[in-house]
Amino acid sequence: MVELGGNLTRDARWLVDFVRAAGAGVIASNSGTGHPESAYVNVAATEDARIVLGTNAGSRKFTNITSDPRVSMVLMRDGTEEVQLEGEATVLEGTEAAAAGETLEAQHPGATDTHDPDALRLVGITVRWALHTDVAREPRLAEELTLR
Image (cartoon, rainbow, N blue to C red):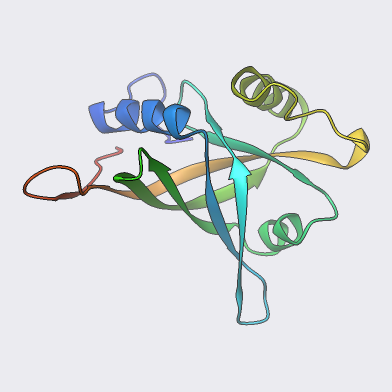
């Protein structure tokens, strides 16, 4: 979550809408071997600008995030507009995980249905930096978002 309480900046509100419209993206995490690991994931955004996703406790992504929470993501919309972001991933528990699961399920019905429910983990990403690029604009837009 962007740690702003209920006072999100205009850019943070815009990012929430963009994440919801994109619905998916590529997350990169540190494998600990010196090689990055990337995965395509369904994402959703909470009202406080946290990006949420689900993963399996046995996945490389989960192992990487629990060892090093620093992640980066790329989300695209309409093939011309993208957001690159960096943040910190947290494995959610209790009521936070339940709320994240509801948010993810609302945007991606069936996203939390799994053959192994005990292995499902919900992850929240606190965005620290984001760059919005839109190549359909003339001149091309590339601007950092003001999240705080």
